[in-house]
Image 1 (cartoon, rainbow, N blue to C red):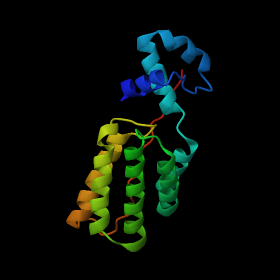
Image 2: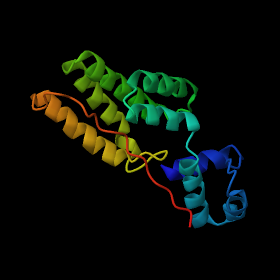
Image 3: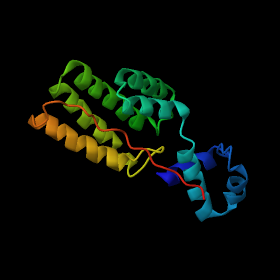
Length: 166
């Protein structure tokens, strides 16, 4: 994934937006190994505030609002981000149907579809611990499907990656 990201920037002759660490990033352009890690970390560290809002809404159990925010982001996203955002939209919709309406069968299928969309974004993407999210949601969906969970709450949260600059 990171290599495609850098190649797309190079092909468009643009420097990535880097508000806080712009000097190190501009100096790292000529250093191949540093450039890759620098651009990749910048992309992850500066998660779109609307994406963070959508994830926070999901983690608070406000699935309808999360769905709306993620859907808006999906419409505006670049092609490389669309499957990831579509997975978040599906996950929000499925969890809303489970939490608000008590449905199980349809939402579980929607969860599995979302997890398939996340497969290419592991282990982390845009600050989300995708591998942990897949593991938690898959085991929860299997428990729901098997009927071993009487009360579907609490719904697993979307785990976020913590960043340390120093």
